[in-house]
Amino acid sequence: MSAPTEQNAGTPGPAGNTGSARAALEALRAEIAKAVVGQDPAVTGLVVALLCRGHVLLEGVPGVAKTLLVRALAASLELDTKRVQFTPDLMPSDITGSLVYDSRTSEFSFQPGPVFTHLLLADEINRTPPKTQSSLLEAMEERQVTVDGVARPLPDPFLVAATQNPVEYEGTYALPEAQLDRFLLKLAVPLPSRDDEINVLTRHAEGFDPRDLQAAGVRPVAGPADLQAAREAVAKTSVSPEIAGYVVDICRTTRESPSLSLGVSPRGATALLSTARAWAWLTGRDYVIPDDVKALALPTLRHRVQLRPEAEMEGVTADSVITAILAHVPVPR
Image (cartoon, rainbow, N blue to C red; front, top):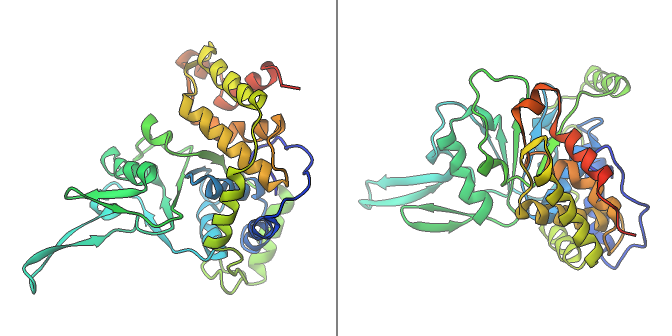
């Protein structure tokens, strides 16, 4: 698998005794590739999020297969999935569910919303007002939904894969920092290369229908048991004090950057450590090296920092600041 960033982690080491779970998750890439061309880093990011019990924000212009990517992931897993198209008139109860009066029993019963699933595709999440966006906060953080004072647990695994368009602002609502911080990763879904785009057109000319993944041959190759075994293995991936210190130094340096008005919080530091451990395990090692941290730093941290207005006017980006910090912070030997 390709790391969800331009940087690559180190050479894979010897595989452990969880090879079958690792092979099942790595098979996701080949299965998703039957429907989606040239988005290996985004695919890897989704797998990392599943291993870390996190959520993913996919950002890209229309037409780069963000929705198809999530649908292909769902079709490659033996998991329930639901899709919600976020619109300005969407209400919180349309996501979480609500109490419905039953005239036969003269009582109210809870009607679960689409959030009660394993994989929720929140399409164009920035097109709905903050009130509806906030309805996902408890679900994403606590893995439960509280309605009428009763907490109702969500299925496990549970992952929110949200999409948004980075260039269209009319009729959109910027995600608040509290909402962004709930996403483990923010993955950029770029335009394909020329060769990949030719491949896309060739597939369509040969009859590929993105609405019919079953006809494209996409089949489940992993399930909850594989995920559970993989998560247990990731939890055993060792982290040396030097690596923990390296993660902390990176995050603390963001708080001192003159280009940033908001640096990475301690929650962001724990997120980076978690994603680095997952990537280390996926590449066949039971320990984390600095390259694992570097490979996941951009997608894990880019949405957890805030640029100063003057830096933004000069063309500085969150990615460029984080990249400079990675080049500046000493790497443990």
